[in-house]
Image 1 (cartoon, rainbow, N blue to C red):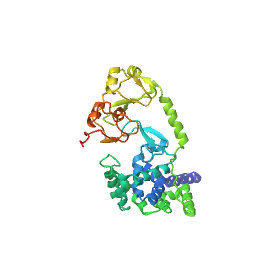
Image 2 (cartoon, rainbow, N blue to C red):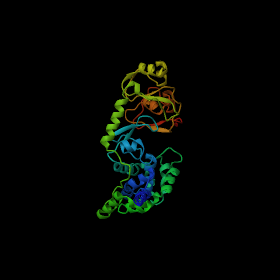
Image 3 (cartoon, helix red, strand yellow):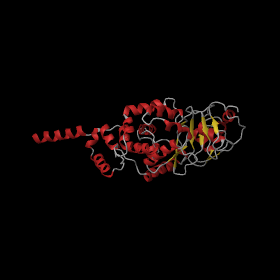
Image 4 (cartoon, rainbow, N blue to C red):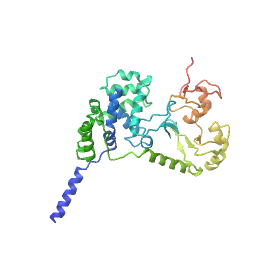
Length: 349
């Protein structure tokens, strides 16, 4: 009986020492060192970088983070020549950057802020003033959410991320340990701490969840795509602009097939989607009801080769309304990088 009692006592002690980290805590433990390294190189507060990463990825759980190692929701832009993936954000099927590992994403985020003129004023702010940086990011147009600055500040203060603004890459793991004392029972973490002390090089904290290799991620994505490339697998989605129903065409197909599947007349589909031909191509966006008269964001800069019809479908706006808002003639093509007005009418010169 004594032996049984002793065994139960050991089990209880083991369980009481075990740590169950929340998603945000896991994210901080793993990526705090990256944020501090970027702070040293680019003079961006680590608290701001970590808060943005937490917010954009949902604590590392977002599809962009897990499949593309993209922790800051950075879209392709014209200058991007690396791997890409499609993801629905402000509009369906938008192009986002894919990185080989999260460290590349953190580096690219720093460059995104450091090398764009919109964010120049940020670098005149005190690095210890995370509130000023949060409001500066919102003012510079980093996000459309009117409460973006307050959301970042809440993330920082709730998780005491401002502590990482006071450390450096040689001491960041000690800051992590001070914040989460339970890591002293984690053999992996403590071994990394010792390694960091010996090498004096920044080390990434390993936490309970692991990133899948990029090759495996790509294979998973390809499997999903291959399954989707049949007519029967087309799924109805809600567009970010007003919840309008739409589908993404998985492969080249005739409009008549879509008409038959969803029991909607071809004429209605042609009218709602401003179509001139019935042939649909892979990745085309097709609305199953009339589009909106205005956009869910104020403006958009066109990419190379985009037409006004492309913009109309991407943001779910009637093509005639789009031409009218931008004081353009029907059929007129936009320039690459042209600012397209989606809500209000383009101001007269």
